[in-house]
Structure formats: C-alpha cells, structure tokens
Image 1 (tube, one colour):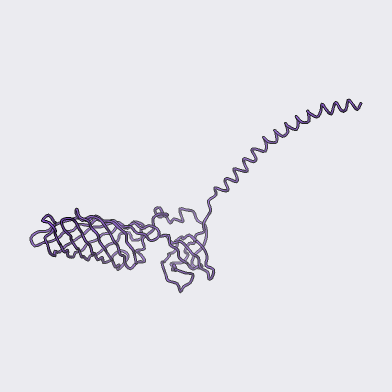
Image 2: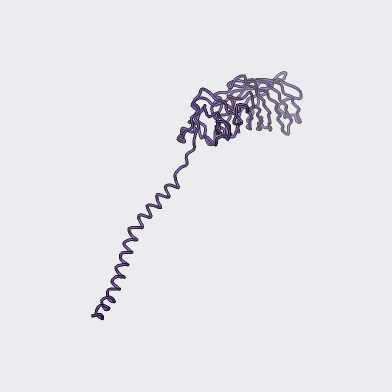
Length: 278
C-alpha cells in the first residue's frame, strides 16, 4: 500500500508542477496589463503641466516697486485687470514679487491683487507672442535715447537721437548724425517732432519730421553737396519692437532735402538700432 502511495505521489508531482506553471503563466498575463496601466498613469502624471500662480490687480491702479515696501523706488504701474506671474513672496510685509510684461521683476502690495491660477492665454493678456514681445515703456517714460546705423544714399550713416516726451503719443526729438563715404563726409544736426501711434502696443509705429543744418566736407567733385553749411528738412517714420527685458529695437526710413544757394538735393536714410527709455 505504501509503495502505491509513493508511486502516486511520484506521478502527481510532475502534474502539480505543470499546474503551477500554467497558473503562473495565467497570472502573468493578467498582471501585465495592470502594470502597463499603472505605468501609463504614472507617465501621465509626469506630463502634467505645472501651474503658476498669477496676481490679478483688483484696484484701479497700484505701484510696482523695486523692493517689498512703499519706501522703495517705483518702477512701474499696474492697472485694474492686469495679470502678472507671481515669482515669490517677501519675507516681511504683505508683498508679492511679480514678473512684469517686459521680463523684469517688481514687488506689488498684496492687498491690491488677487492671487489665483489662470490659463496661458489669459496670463498672456492677449499680447502677441508674450514670451518674445513686451509693450515698450512709453507710457511711463519721460524720453528715450536711440542709436542707429545704416545708409544715407550710398554712404554709411550713424545717428544719436535723444527724445523728450510731452505725452506718450508725442515728443520732441534731437538728431546728431554723421554720414561718411569716399567722396566726403556730412555732419547733421536737427530738431523735430515725433508722433507715436499705439504707444501701448508691442510694435509702435511712429512719424517724424523737422529741420536743421548740415556741414559738408567733400573729398571729390562727385560728393552730393558743396563744401560748407546748408539747411535741411526731413520727414519719415519707423517701427519700434518692444522685447522682453526692456530691449527695444528700432528701424526707420527718412527722406532729406538739403538746400544750397541755387538747388536742393534729396537723399534717403535707411537705418536701425537700439533705443533706451528713461
């Protein structure tokens, strides 16, 4: 009897092994999809976009300051409905560090804003490519200084142009410029007006016009003017491109008329450069 039981156990042992193998295969086929779903869920969690808090101005206007306190210098102004990314909170007082539209940082009083989360479109304020463009600081500026390089006719040209604003839309512009070629050189000094169209826009068209004097020093008979001083008039316009971090590019075209005793000569300027507001 005992020998028969041992034989049955011997026979049953491979059967149990086969059954266990089949059970393990079945368990692996059930468990794999579950693990794949868990991995996919974990991957979805990794792809979640981190949200950033934004401060919405809830008063008519609030000063943006260089530090967390009313005694710090005012660097800007935010109006009701403006939305600014929050980058931190001051360790003293109820002040938030926010990022301005030009990429620079400032502090705003906490009681003047409501901090919440908004979508990317609303955070951009509807601006064109907010990660690249920012409105030029014309509304807050008293003036600007630009330096441009280009061509006046077929000669090289460089101009330094400070401007002083009576309002964001209008101001007075001064010009000190030089044009140099193999045929001679020309120094220009002028004063005129500048009109800014859409001063709150990231791209600001402007119109200029005025007059002044030019000092000519020819090296050859082919130079556009005779030696000496002549009067000039100019008119034209251009575009400013406000970029983040208070970088503003400027491109423009102007037409000049130089008046000699018995004739006048016209030339066109095409130039571009940088401008700084103050």
